[in-house]
Length: 318
Image 1 (cartoon, rainbow, N blue to C red):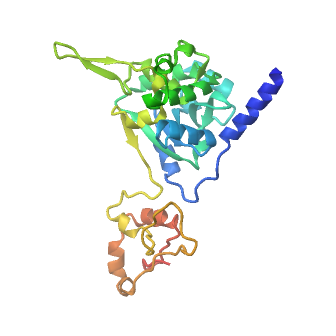
Image 2 (image 1 turned 90 degrees about the vertical axis):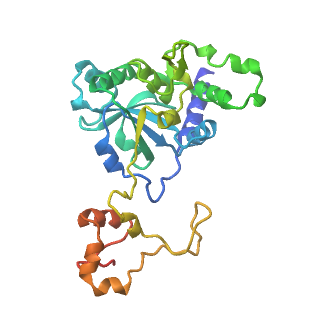
Image 3 (image 1 turned 45 degrees about the vertical axis):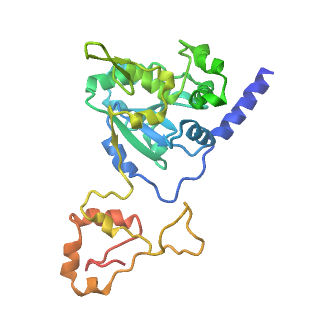
C-alpha cells in the first residue's frame, strides 16, 4: 500500500511540475543578469508549470518561485560550505549556483542556467555586507535535502482567502500543526528564515512606542511568498530586459509593427511579422543616418540583431 501511494504521489508531482514551452521571445537578458548577480541576491522566477499557476492564483503575483544565489563553488572561502555543496551538486566548479526548495526534489543546489528560458528578476538586499551574505548562504545550506512542504501551499491559500470563504476557527489554527518543524520547507520560507538569522528586514511589523521610538518585529517566515521580496523596500529590484533602453533614444529604433495595438496576448493569424521599413530620406544622407545612431554602434546593432534588424555599412536597415 505504501509503494502504491508513493507511486501515485510521484505521478501527481510529475504532472504538477511539467512545464509549458518557453515563449518565443524572452523578457530578460539572461546573460547580463547572470553577469551582475552577487552572492546573497534573491532570484525571482515566473514559472510555467501547473503548480506555478496554482501559486499565481494563491499569491496574486506572477512570481512563483524564489531562489538564493550563492555564487560559484571556487568563490566560496568557507571550506565547510564548499564541502556541503559538493555533497549535493556534481556539476562544474565554475557553475553559478542557486539554493532552492522545489516540489518533487526538496531543498537542493541548482545551476542558474536552469532558468535561462524563464522570466527572472534580481532582488538585492540593500547594504548587506559580504560577511552577512555568507552567513545567509550558510544558514540556507544547512537545510539541503529537506522535503518540500506541499501542505504549506494550501495553508497559505487558506490564509490569503477572504474571511467570508472560511470559518474563523480554521484561520486561527493556521500553521499550528507544523509549528517548529524543520523537516519541510518551501522556497520563500527558507530564504526568509535565512535573512531573519542575521536580523535583515524583509517586511517587518513596525510599531512606535510611547516615547516615539520605533520597534521592529519579525514576521513568521511561513507567511512569506516570492512577491514579498519584490515588494520589500529593503531590496533593490534589478531588471535586465531582453532589449535594453540604456542608450538614449534607443526606444525609437525598436521594430514596432504598424498594425496597431493588440487587445490580447496573441497575434492575429493574418498579421505578418515584418521588419521595419527604412525611409528613403535616411538613405540619401549616410552621414545624417550615422549621427542618429546612438554610440556605441556595436552595442545598438547587437541588441537590434536579436530582433532581426540588421545594418549595412551605410547605416541603413536590411
